[in-house]
Image (cartoon, rainbow, N blue to C red; front, side, top):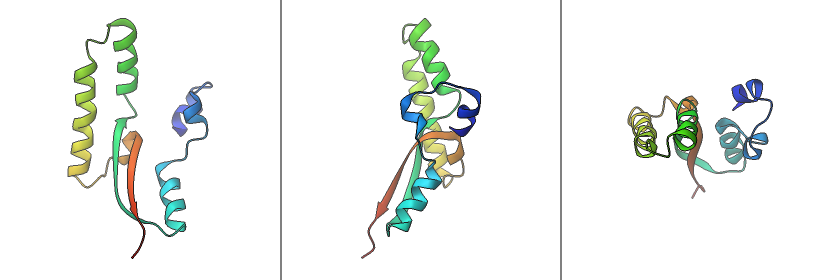
Length: 99
């Protein structure tokens, strides 16, 4: 997102105040939660751009393959222990309270 902030002067509202994955994790751990897992689910590039072209110019014909590409990328990342987290601009994290 920081790269997009430098390149695009106008961004969707959801991106204007977005924290990075590392900032969120640090803040939640500071509050006593224990990080258990992270997973990306929306590749930063090229899926969002391709999805836009798909919806605007192609009538949605590529929706299923593009969603599958995202799922496969997420599965590969998860299978490798999440070394590709920087390639995803949408992600989920699982935290637990210590016992």
